[in-house]
Image (cartoon, rainbow, N blue to C red; front, side, top):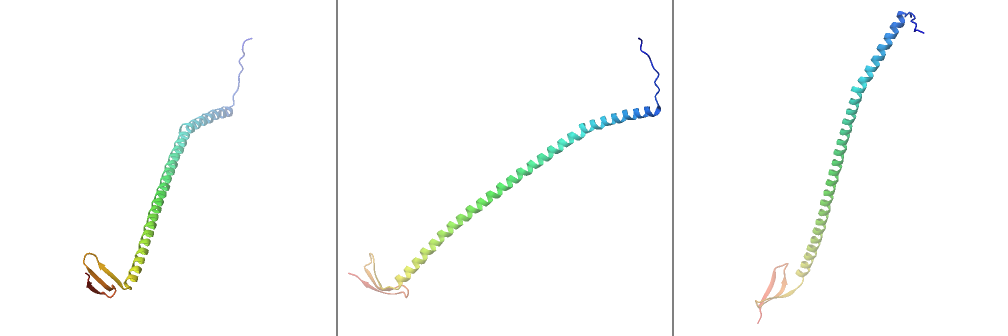
Length: 138
């Protein structure tokens, strides 16, 4: 049994279709290779850049929020200190008002004051009118 060789007739249209099929298959391989070599790395690099930009924006946003919180905290402390200072000043003003009322009450009385170490008695002291009488003691 020896191999037999048969004559095969190939139609020109079939040969053209076969060549076109081979060329299209090769073109698909080239395009697939370009996609794998060029497009996929570009997409990966682009995604990495987008991720880096998003991370930088998130970090900046967090820093801005922290800065705003620190400023609000400092303003709160300053306002609380101003409130405390205001309350202290109000207390001082109330004490001054009480002192002024006491001085008014003292001014309206007739007092007898002895000046220490001078031996002088002061009678009928009226601070508001500025009149008083001096008398030597002893």
